[in-house]
Length: 142
Image (tube, rainbow, N blue to C red; front, side, top):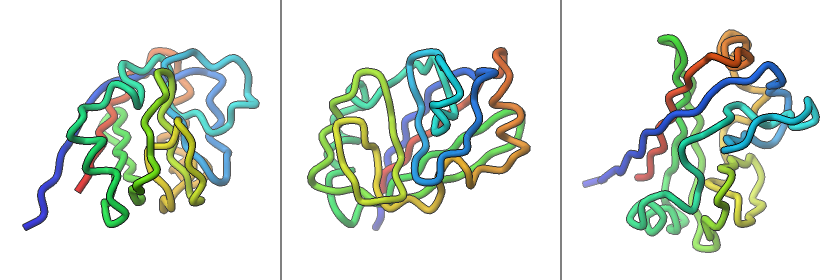
C-alpha cells in the first residue's frame, strides 16, 4: 500500500516571471528582483523547505520516494514529478527548488524532475506573470 503526504500552501505571481530556465523550477518567499531569475514561477510564498513537516522531509529522503509539485492558477494546473534522495537537507528558509538534474543543495526539494520552468504551459506562465495572481501549490511525497 502506497501512502502519500500532501502539503498545500499559497504564493503569488510577479510581472518579472519568465519561467524560461531549462533545468529548474523555483518557488521563493521573496519578490523577483530581475528577469535573470528565470527559474522562478511563484513569489511571496507562505512556505519554504525548512518549514515542511518533518514527516514529509523524512519520506522524501528515500531514493524511491516520488515527489510532486502541483501548480494551480485559475482552474489550470500543472504537475511536476521527480525523486527524493537521502542527501536532501531541506535547509532553505527562503526557497523550494525542483531540479531535472541530480544536483542537491539545501534548496533542493526533488531531483530528476520531468519538467523545468521552460516546460510549463505558456498559458499558466502568462497567469504567473500577474502580480495579483494567487497560486495554489501542493507538494506530494509518496
